[in-house]
Image (cartoon, rainbow, N blue to C red; front, side, top):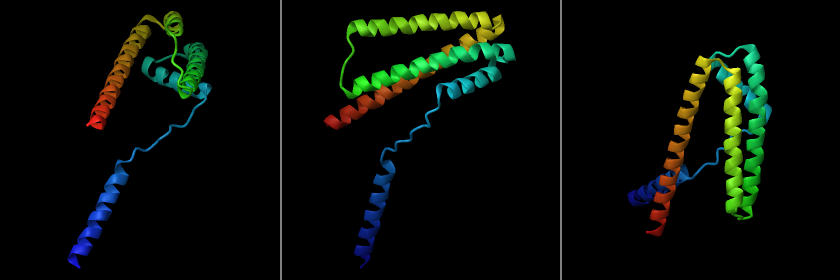
Length: 152
């Protein structure tokens, strides 16, 4: 009887731990480009101490940037579903457009912000870029480790 009870307890414990390890798909709510831009402007206002005039000038820039990014991501996801790889010319065009957009955004922000605000904005952008690179590196490491375990 004791063996039966211990086996049942072991089975339940094993079941619960395997259920706890299942990957959960936590999908974030999809905000509109306008909502997302509004939140970004508010964060920038807190960190850069933006005036009302500056907020009104920055919001349309961010809204267009976010809308472009969403459209690009949707297009990219469709291509991924179809298992279609971009050509080198397409990759070049996308990267070139991205860099042009960054230059335009930087010049616009330079015109809108004062010198101190712009310096702080640049620091924020560098810190953000470093965090993104760090997360990408961690993701690659996890993916490679998973592949190695799978081969064994």
